[in-house]
Every structure is written in structure tokens, then in C-alpha cells.
Image (cartoon, rainbow, N blue to C red; front, top):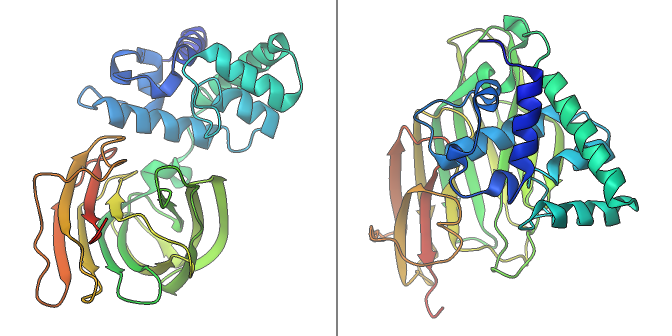
Amino acid sequence: MPVSPEQLMEELRTLCRGRGVQTPGIDLHVGPALRQVCGIVETDGAEAVRTKLKDWVTNAVRGFPVEVRNAVLAPLGLHEEAQFRFLNERIEWLAKQQDRGARTVRRRMDAGLQRLVEVALQPAPSTTHAAPSELWHVKEFDALLKLDGPTPACTERRTVVADTDGVNEIIWSITIPAPTPDGAPGDLDVEVLHGVELIGHERPSPRRFLMKLRLPRPLNAGQTHQFALEVRVPRGQSMRPTYVFWPERMCESFRLRVRFDRDDLPESVWRVEEALARDTDDLTPWPRKLPVDEIGEIDVSFPHPRQGRGYGVQWMPRGA
């Protein structure tokens, strides 16, 4: 059924109220027009709905002028620095950032939302230019986190499958937690090991890194390709004792191995599975404790991890 621009605009305005996209139980507050343009289905839970909304909006506003982009992200509760409880507070924050009155900012918000509607209702692209979420998915994601070296390092190998013809680029993302609950997110060193060429990168928020990777040749639908990256925490920078994968697109399997320093084994390690947002913010042990083997490693697998849920491990350092 065609989406009405008036209905979509009204649903976006309604979504801006309260906490915006951060509203608990967001799946109960999203109307049919937004569900259609964001690809939200009946079986999606609150966090999957929130993820799809966030991905759709952030991708849609990527090319907007910065003042228009912020006038969309802040009211919807998607700007990293404007996570206030009420829309009026987010409007006040935006007014200070843009040195404008609240009335002007509200007009900019409406103009930004109107442009968002225009993006949503533009003619469907051809198959060879499908939306990024439809271009490819992950067949296998294999991560080895090494904590026994001079600094934490993770080797991430992905096998991707093209879902349409002509896939020649991959967008790889990672979101890092702050080393401590009150600390600021740190930096990452990323090195390509094989299979792709790094042709661009950006940091859209303090915690989020995006890497644009070029494949050696275009893939047609059904073809697979493997690539590997080495991600390191810079020397001298601490790492929070957690590694959790939050799938942003379909993933058929995820395997994680962690190699601890045998001279500094953690007090306890636990498996994180089907986590919701904020579930992993603290280090409260989950019921499924994991034994560290005789060479200081743990090995966990997650078949068919769900989009919008978290999978991985956390641990309590000895003496913490």
C-alpha cells in the first residue's frame, strides 16, 4: 500500500515527542507508514524496531547539510549529545548549538522531517542500486580477541554473501564502549589483513566507527567473499572487559574466541546472548558462566544471531 506523505510526516512528528526513538516499548509507538518505509515486520521486538528506525534515519540524512541533519537527529533522540528526556530539552540544546531561537529550530525540525519524507517516498531504485541493507549479508563472522599481548587486538574475519548483482563495496562498522562507565570512548587502530581495500572511514559519533571497504571484484547474487581486519586498542588505552556483537544485518553464524593472558586470568567469564540495549552496560554476571581452558581461552558460537540483539562475552578482571 502506498505511503501517504502526510501520514508519514505526522508519525515522525509524533515520534519526536518524549524520548523519541529511545522511548521504551518503541514497537508499540510506531505507525504503519514508518513500519513500511523502515521494513519493520510484526515479529520485530522493541530493540529491532529501534535499530531499523535508527539505521533508516541516519542513512537518509547522511547527505543533508549539518544543520538540517542535526535538526532531524536531535528531536528524534538520535544525536549522541542530545539524549534528553523531553523534546523541549532537545530543542533547547539544538537552539544553543545553532545560536537560534527555539521557534526557528522548530521550523528547521519540520523542514528536516519534510526532507526525510521526501527521501522515503522517492521512486524505488533499480536492483543494481538496492538499499545498503539489501545488498549483502554475513554468512560467517569469526572473531579472535587476543588479550595476552601488549594491547588488546581482535582479528575479525567475515564471509559475506551478495544478495544482488554488482556488489563491490562493504560498509563495516564497530561501536566501542567507554573503558569505564564514566569515561569517554577511545580510539581504534584498524588494519586490513586481506580481501578488501580500505577506501574511506568516518566517525559519525564518539563511539561509532564506519569503514568503507572495496572488494577486489564485484560480486553477483549468491557469490561469497571473505575478508579480515585487525582491530587494536592503541597502546596505553584501556579496554572495557566486554566483547558483544550487535548484528546490523542478517548474519548466519557468529563465533568468538577470546585468548586471555595466562598470568592474569579473569575472575569469571560469562556468555551474553539475546541481550537488549543497556543489558551489557554494567558487569553483572549472566547465568551462563564460561570456563577458561588450560591454555587460557574460551570459545563460543551463536547460530543465526538476531538483528538488534547482543551476542558475545564479558568478564570480571581479577581483583576488580
